[in-house]
Length: 354
Ligand SMILES: Cc1cc2nc3c(=O)[nH]c(=O)nc-3n(C[C@H](O)[C@H](O)[C@H](O)COP(=O)(O)OP(=O)(O)OC[C@H]3O[C@@H](n4cnc5c(N)ncnc54)[C@H](O)[C@@H]3O)c2cc1C
Image (tube, rainbow, N blue to C red; front, side, top):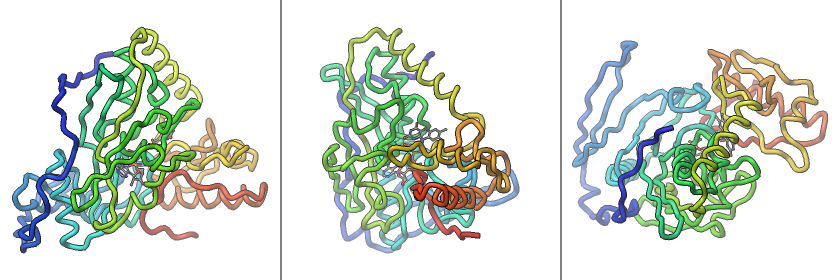
């Protein structure tokens, strides 16, 4: 496997505030709106943030930006390519009092069919990595896919990230969710993470201050939808790995993890991975299966035959179909086991129970 290598860099600076906020940043702004034709004849309005190359788009479909492939549009959408554009976007939203929703790869999100108000900020273009041979640490920007990082580490013969190869999210999303698999998780290897506030200040969180638990961190809840003043956006994270192993062996172990997941989990259709947290000492999938719900379908959404803790979009599902299945599972498992399953998936926007 060939992976693009990051150019060697010892100069990589952290994503940080580009100049302090000045009174002039509060001055009235001239917004340049233009429209572009989309293939289906729909137009999308673009607003250029003054003084930048940064375009805010209106009405962008979030179905194309989430692994479920369901959900309505973002009222406003920004996917900055540079730290400067990220900061300009946050300032722009702050000046307008817009709510902000943070999006990584959208692999743990169920977005309402009604879409999301305010500005959705997606980190997927904020990518960069630096492997530090001196101390075995790898620094990655928030939008770097965690699986790509795992393959890069394996190619170098660095161990510690083999478990992450099947997780289709970003570095930022992995930290917020404390993503994990194969009895390992983000908390095991995180050194620290940089969290940006709208005023441009960076707070450095460690595993202790992130208060990691099973698929949780202190950044959940405050992270995904907030006013610009309270938003906390992970810009980068540093992980401690162990260099010096045989690259062939680490590649083989990483591949084995990937194969094991493909054999046991339904990767062939859109999903968010596991929908519910496992309630100790049970497995959510087992409880769902024992409740006789495997294969149950609402609209285009189905409880997977191969792994009952997955809900699949079998084609044409709406977010509401998935939501109704989530509610059905919760009520059936509660009826049978007196346990309320807690969703791991983040549900964003308005949902209505049937
Ligand atoms: C097929 C499949 C398999 C999966 N397998 C696993 C698995 O084995 N283990 C596992 O743990 N998960 C798994 N997942 C779930 C998902 O991939 C993880 O939770 C992943 O860490 C989410 O990352 P993301 O970038 O997609 O975040 P998103 O889904 O985009 O966002 C998740 C949360 O993080 C917040 N967020 C994202 N980026 C930032 C940022 N930069 N700063 C602050 N907040 C941010 C969002 O607001 C949201 O609250 C799977 C998903 C799929 C589709």
